[in-house]
Amino acid sequence: MKQTIDQLPLTKTIEDVLQQLGIKDLNPTYSTGLVWGGKENRNTKAIHSPADGNKIASVNMATPEDYEQVISTAQEAFKSWRKTPAPKRGEVVRQIGDKLREYKEPLGKLVSYEMGKILQEGLGEVQEMIDICDFAVGLSRQLHGYTMHSERPQHRMYEQYHPLGIVGVISAFNFPVAVWSWNTMLAAVCGDVVVWKPSEKTPLTALACQHIIREVLVNNELPEGIFNLIIGDAEIGSLMSHDGRVPLVSATGSTRMGKKVGEAVGARLGKSLLELGGNNAIILTENADLEMALRAIVFGAVGTCGQRCTSTRRLIIHENIYEQVKERLLKVYPNLPIGHPLSSTTLVGPLIDKEAVKAFQQALERVQAEGGTLLTGGEVLEGEGFESGNYVKPAIVEAKNEYETVQEETFAPILYLIKYSGDVENAIELQNGVRQGLSSAIFSSNLLETEAFLSHWGSDCGIANVNIGTSGAEIGGAFGGEKDTGGGRESGSDAWRVYMRRQTNTINYSRELPLAQGIRFDIMD
Image (cartoon, rainbow, N blue to C red; front, top):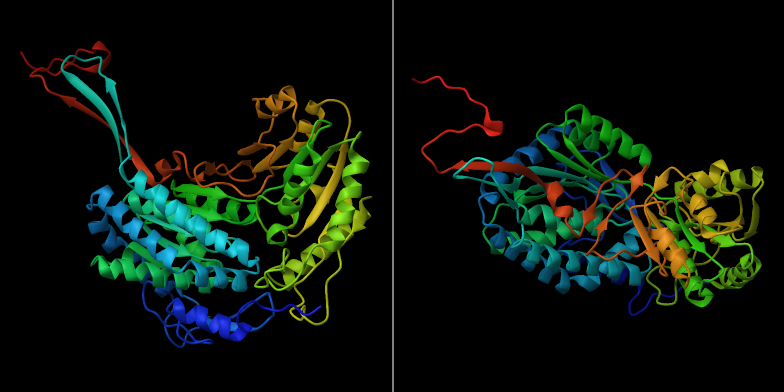
């Protein structure tokens, strides 16, 4: 079925969006200098929308020489930015938040068209950026340390936090701007400068954000090198990971990629913030509110076409309600509105590219070879409205938790139904029985079950939810996970501390020099 685009013809919509965001031509080749990326006559990469396969633009890919210039620019900007009072830095971030409000609609459309998530999710991603700006503004007046009593007379001790310097941010295609903003707005109020390497699959949203931020920097007579963008391939990410001038590298992506970043950064004793893969489960006990649970399950499993690190991939169901839940899901899935992400009727957009479609098909083949049963979905859609070849029908598979395919994260809309018997501890053991540890959830109205899930012997994930799904975290809480998810924490709570270096200070306001632990070391008569 052909998908109609709301309000304007598609070409006109995207042309207007790009122009509103300061990107003047529909198919430009960008040559935007040090803070933006590569120079003229360099290797270019064509950017196609997964929604219809159309070319949106071409971007220059940065070289190692470009990288050196970007780092030099960032180092110079840090010299002045770190001396700017934190509340003043917060004021700049406040203005960025206001600009994002102004550009929310066109930027949300560009996120949707370039990445493939539906428009409501694209707008929600921009709202997430606005929210983290608001959070960071308040934080700029709360970068507190601690005071401690000294054991030595007429001494005092306290701790304070200082900016690190350059923060490298490597972001993934599925949240092309939100995760960058989590890192960048907190780093900015902490006094750091940022070098951002976006996914090479979604660079236009990054360019748009840089245009928006540049307006604020120019208005405040600040150097552009506070916020830097470099568009490049894995070579640029490797340079950043090995670069001792970048004390912190925050990387979002696959576990495989994160291990490479962590190894490189660790070898030089730098800091890494890793937010990697998830293999998230929802537990349904006998005491679950199924009406509420089903809404959370479907959004978690098919939202963003299963391309969230918090997507629901495993559904662990008590045997007494298993058939009922399966029957309900099999009624919902065949009727999911699949189509162009800019259509208001669409709930499931495309996968990012044909490689993702191939991975989807291969995972379904493997799990069936292991003994799983495909209950619905799995087809690649063709015909009018699906010409890009990136649209698939979300799949439901009956499987066992120990299957190798179930143990892996497939970035696609595959939901594995897993049956459990006995008490909730058996379900928790299944939920924890994977290498990843990002998000988890339980649906139950039984206090004993939910508290067991939240206890220290319960969920081993960084996120554990009760009566809500695995997907859709708020910015106020620290976001991240354990095990193969990498252990990093971004966004809210006290995640700001990772962007700063900690310093203990002891001040002697006496005329004596006593040593700690009562040590005597007299060299004078």
